[in-house]
Amino acid sequence: MKKLYFRCLGLSVLAGLIAGAPVAAAQDVVKVGMIVEMSGPFSEFGRQMQAGVKIYQEQFGDSVAGKRVEVVYRDTGGANPDAAKRLAQELVVRDKVQVLAGFGFTPNAMAVAPIATQAKLPMVVMNAAGAGITAKSPYMVRTSFTYSDVVPPIAKWAVEQGAKTAYVIVADYAPGHDAEQAFVKTFEAAGGKVVGAVRTPLVTTEFAPYMLRVKDAKPDVLFAFVNGGSVAPAFIKEFRAKGLGADGIKLLGTGDVVDEPIMNVIGEQGMGMTTVYPYSMHHDSALNKEYVQRFKALLGNNERPAIMSVAAYDGMAAIYAALKKTGGNADGPALIAALKGLEIESPRGQIRIDAKTGDIVQDEYIRRFDKVNGEFANIEFKTYKAGN
Image 1: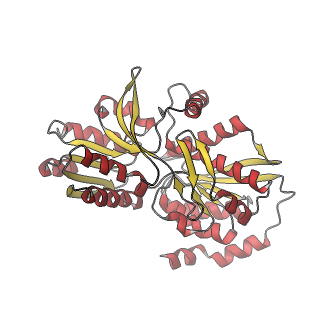
Image 2 (image 1 turned 180 degrees about the vertical axis):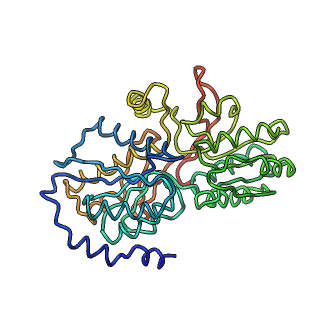
Image 3 (image 1 turned 60 degrees about the horizontal axis):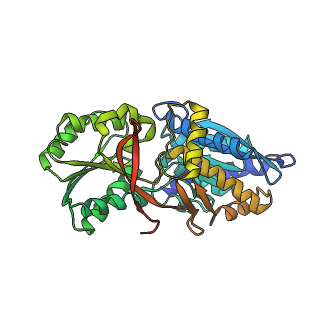
């Protein structure tokens, strides 16, 4: 697969283009090329990330260490690695960006990794959650999360609550596979038994056949990872329609299933569901309260920030902090060295970019779908500290 990436990219051609491109004038501007989903079924990803970037620059300005930070957006329309690769090449060669960022989907980030390596440009992953993707380029860091870190706490918690059997449903792509593997491994290591597992198409809303399989298996818990948008509400609706909750099956999942922007769509059907995630808009910290206020001021009082916006906000915080460390030097090797090892206060809590792997280190929260002042909310009630 690695050889295929390099062959398709034509990196020798790209290298020639980079070498032949005129040097950007004066370097008074540091350009960040954001490759995100601005249209299509996952346009909320891009909308959230764009909001996080805007909030950070509204709060801290558009300049750091004597350089103005300019953000340039490009739309992949979804999980489209070919488009992501092409857009990254354009951003590097034509727009002369010094940082690549964004990446809502793992396949998109994977496709761009060789370009970041060849161009020696830092690549800040703000959403893609596939395990180990930062190993694909020494120039990549991540400010979002990985399911291999997110999922084990809820598997442990389920066994602690007395669950002995589980069924697993995940979306059929790399993050879903990671979530399935992490849950099965941790749940069974803790003494539970997984009685069934199934992978579903990425954007399906037809869950009836899967729910019938779960109903027949009669597990104590159903663990789910499906994406937001229209997918997760359809999943939860079918869970209720088929009477799984009434049968005593507890619904667990990653935070994607009850993502903040879709909570009102899910409504009462989500009440009591337990999920795990590194962020809730109701996280109790002064910085998060300010962040939520700024998010609502920017997009509207009924809007809700999700992890994608926070990870973009933190990605900008990391870029700014790295530029401060380098004294404004945006040279790729210097900037990536400054990014690795950073510790940042985030709206979700304290986070760290691992100095060796470039991956994020953070706490995970077990949350309950409930109401606060009459509004649906993911309420954190147990914290699993980073590394535990």
